[in-house]
Image (tube, rainbow, N blue to C red):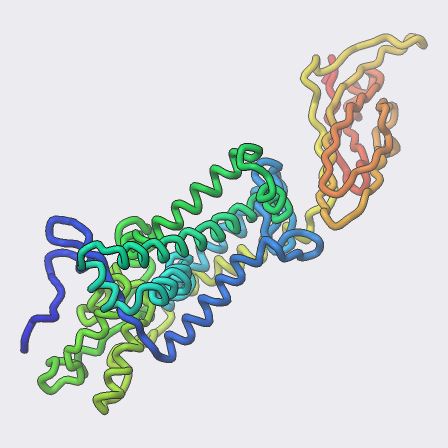
Amino acid sequence: MSRLYELPTDHLASSTQDGHRVYLYPADVRGRLRRIRTGINTVLILVFLSLPWIRIGGRPAILLNLPERKFAILGIQFWAHDVPMLFFVIAGAVLSIAFVTSVWGRVWCGYACPQTVFIDGVFRRLERWIEGDSWTRRKRDASALTASKLGIKAIKWSAFALVSLVIGHSFLAYFVGTEAIGRMMSQSPLENPGAFGVMAFISGLVLFDFGWFREQFCIVACPYGRLQSVLMDDRSMVVGYDPARGEPRGEGGDCVNCYRCVAVCPTGVDIRRGTQMECIACTACMDACDEVMTRTGRPTGLIRYTSVSALKPRSFAYAAVLLMLAGGLTFTLSTRSLISAELVRAIEAPYQVIPDSDGVVRVTNHFKLDVRNQDFKASRVRIELAPESLAAGVELVTVNPEFGLSAGELKRVDVFFKFPTALLRSGSGRSWLNVGDRKVEVRLVGPFS
């Protein structure tokens, strides 16, 4: 059998032997899995574009406001001091990918990775509509530069640039909010140079990556491809070729060596050589092979998902840790107060000893009280500092015993505590200050503490 269609064995199909890139022209493919991926791509793109505009409980569905140190994730409000709670979210996301990979292989890469979703769902579709099918594109790129070729390329890259700008603006909206994005778009870039610079950088990066770099990111730069060998084993579900049924190719086996599975692969992999790091499990080869098998009167499934023989202990461990993280996040959110209060000792001398007019020697401690209304849904709330929760003999002195806090507002209040020195000698100076529904411990100090 001719080896005309065999890929090289000493280097990747997407590069020459000396390391230069070989540009790939994946052929179009139709089939059941292609329709599923198209539906998933559409949903994920719509979710990415719409999430900054969606409100859950009056908050943005996703807001990562770094300058103001406030974050909203699916309606849950986080502040900078809530970073430990974000650990549950971030660790859960990482472990979810590890769990999915250990059971279903690189299904994330093929169906949900933004690299795959936007290239396959937007950029390659635009390319196909403007430039034609893979054979036409390959032939045009190999031809001499003409006015027609230059015009078609200009139209394609203009469309790519427009889509990249939409993605760049949508990405920025996750960090500044849609209201700010709308306001910035109506102003000169010089009025918001930082935000404009971030948007321009992200848009340029998207244009370079999704428009030209493409599969090279998956092969060269993405760390997940390297991690798959750690997360997967022989029992993980993968896109696989059945050599027992397919070989020898064209000589008794079902594989007719048509090369169609390689022609549609976005990373230039020959799946017949087994699971490879470059395979992103997009299942294009499965649809392509099934189409050929149907035409030649052979059973489909020569390239198919191999079944998981058994769930391995590692997968159960991932699932158990995910449940613990979900439980930890649920517990911390359910026990978190909507009013945050923190008592910090002032930077002046830790205490002052002052004789009062009645001859009793008293100590004064100076604190800074930081109070924040963490509930973005609530209107203005009233905060009262309750001195009756203090130990006997301790007097609260402040000019703001009551004050209001708007949703999300932080207020710093100076508070002083006066108490006789005898309180420290007796060891009964432990006190608490009620701040709304919060109880804050007051650590009194003095010459006898």
